[in-house]
Image 1 (tube, rainbow, N blue to C red):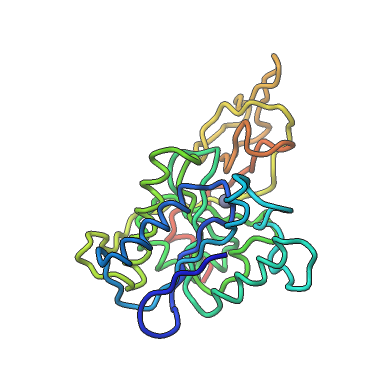
Image 2 (cartoon, rainbow, N blue to C red):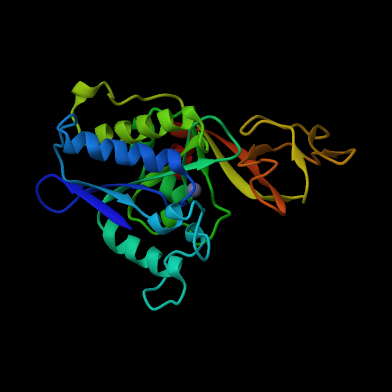
Length: 273
Ligand SMILES: [Zn+2]
């Protein structure tokens, strides 16, 4: 793990990338911003750190060394498993800071923000609104994820791994976050944007080894509609759902997650309070 700190005093904001060593869009964009700050191209107004997490996996060109880091939080310093120690070290580094955790997917070319629970959605709704991203997913079906353990912040998925667009979206999301948290000034053109944000929540996974997903993430699949194909067999939805993180190649045993549409952010937050 490598940490780059800027500004006076201990960091109040953290940009985290490379939890998965193969998600190079976030890693390259994070390191680009680090060198822009080093070169004086970007001025830092509030202490910030950039955390390149699984450098060891990145060096091997793989997602992880022993186990998926984003399934083993909070981890333990005494563990024999590399990623379990790394999880614990990362939580220590980001403690007390506002966090942006950047990922990319194999399933969706757009950008969306994510949180781990409705509580986290409510607590961070102002920041989510400020990011200017019009889709937010509440990923309540995961265990051991980093975002379940940090105090404040959110996660973003910036698009398809290795794509040109994902590099752009990663940098854009990081700069927008730095602007939202007051690390950089308004003069970079990343002013706070407030839009109508659609909120979805996962409600279990859809199993299916070898299924080719033929729908679109966050687009409604009606009851009786075909959303996948296996050999010559069509896979039909038993009831209406919204696919989240669904893909042909993303996971081996599951197609992805069955999502529900919760409404627009302001209404969802209003009903939770
Ligand atoms: Zn990831």
